[in-house]
Length: 437
Image 1 (cartoon, helix red, strand yellow):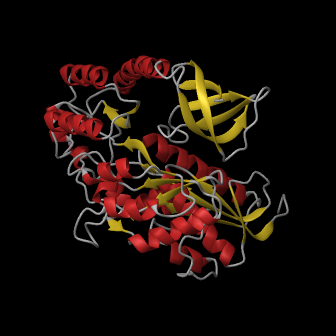
Image 2 (image 1 turned 60 degrees about the horizontal axis):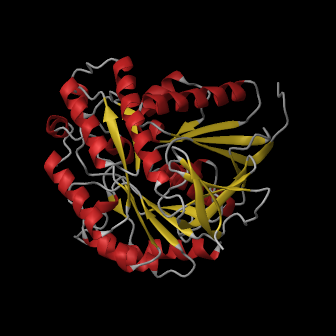
Image 3 (image 1 turned 135 degrees about the vertical axis):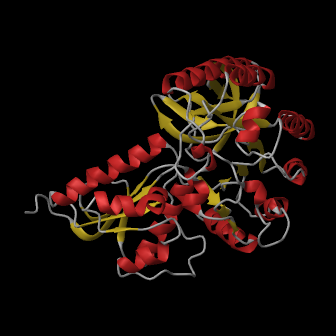
C-alpha cells in the first residue's frame, strides 16, 4: 500500500562522492529537464516518484556511504514511498553484479559511461546537442568543468581506472562552448577537474595540451577565475605555469596530490617519480609562479609503510610548508596492484599517522594565515552563514580550503560578487576581514 503520494514524473537525483560526480549529476539533470522531466537535486520533499543515486566507490568510507544510501531508498521503495530506484556511478560500475544480487529493490544499475542507456530506461532520449547544458547544483557563480574522463596512470592503490575507464579528453572547442554557456548563466569561476589534468590532450592532440586549453578558456568573457584541480607530478607540463603568469584570471593555485615522499613508498605506489624529482618540481613551480598556493593530498598506512617512511613524510611536510594539505588512510581495494600486498598497518595506526600529519599542517596553516593579517585580497563570496558572509581568495577552493569571514551585522556584500577585503584576524584555517577602503 502506498503510504505517501508522489509525482511519477518527478526525479530526485542524489549525488555522493567527488566533484566529478557532481558534474555528472548536473549533466544528467540537464538531459532529464530537456526530456520534460521534473527534476530536483537531493530534495527532502519526498514527493518524487523516481530516485537516481549517483554513487561513489573510491575508498571504504565512500563505498559504505553509497551502500547505506541505496539501502535507505530501497526500503523507501519497499514501503511504497517511491516508484522506481536507479543506481549509477562508480560503485555501480565496479560492483554491479554483487549489488544487483544483494539489493533486490533497485530497478536498474548503470555505470559511469551509461548515461544514454539510463535515459533510455526512463523513456528519454540522449540529446547530443546539449553541450554545456547542465542544472548546476553549486552556487550559480562557480561551476566544475570536467575536461577529461578516466585515467591511464598505473598507481597501485587506485581503483579509479576500474570505475572510470581509460583517459578520454574532451575537445577544446566543446569545453569552450561549455564555458561560454556557464558564463552566460552568471558563472564567474571555473574549477577544472579530471583524474589527471596534466594528461589532457595526449589522446586527441598527441601532446599535453592543457596550456592551450587554458588560453582558450581564459578568453571567455565573464570568467574571472579558473582554478586547477588534480595535477599529476610525473610528466608535469611546465608551460601551464607560463600561462598562469600571463593570464590574470587563472588562479595562482594548484591541487597536486603527491601521496607520499619516501622513495620506497613512491616506487611501490607506482607513481613514476622520486623524492628528489618531487622536491625539484615543487621548487620550480614556486620559482616560476611566486606566491602560488599549493594543495596536496597524502596517504597514511600504505602496505609496508615503515616508521622510518612515515617519519620521512612527516619531516617533509614540515619542510615543504604546503598551503593546503589533506591526508587519507590507505584503503585496500580489490583488483588494484596493491591488493596483492599485505595490508599490514592497523586502522588505529593509520588514523594516528593522519592525525600527526594534520597537527603539523594545522600549525603551518596558522602561521601562513597570520602572515596575511593587514594585507588585502580579492574575495569571492559564496554564502551567508552564522552571522558572516563567507568567501574565498584565489588561493582557496570551495569546500576543502580556507575561508574569509566578513561580519554581516556591520557589512553587506552580494553573494556571488567579488570584494576587496583587508584581513584583520586569522585562525588555523580561516581569515577574518573588513572591506578595504
